[in-house]
Length: 131
Image 1 (cartoon, helix red, strand yellow):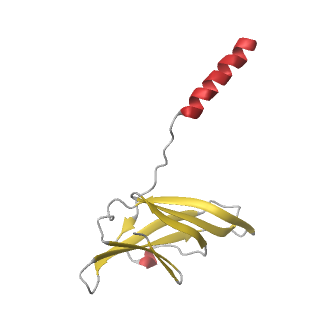
Image 2 (image 1 turned 30 degrees about the horizontal axis):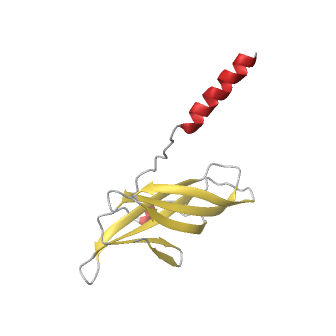
Image 3 (image 1 turned 120 degrees about the vertical axis):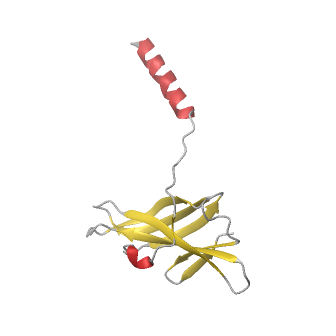
């Protein structure tokens, strides 16, 4: 029995040392905003880490799976610089529960569009400059 616990702790130690990476879904580019559900949510924090857009959001619910997607478009501004603006869609799946989810971490792969000179994230009346 003692050998079993020793082996168990050894295996747990091995598993805890392995590096785990998150797979971030790709951002969807150049589609109309009307193509996505826009249920309410708040933004706690936005950051660009390498090619990953990381967004911490909050929302009401708690009974259904909430789905977020990032989408964006690229254009040229008046100065001739390439500008990419990203948004989040939120599908609450008709969640009528009233729990407040205060922090939900999301990430999205922006690698197809990080060649742009200017990167922004937009939400309601806020515009976040990413680079």
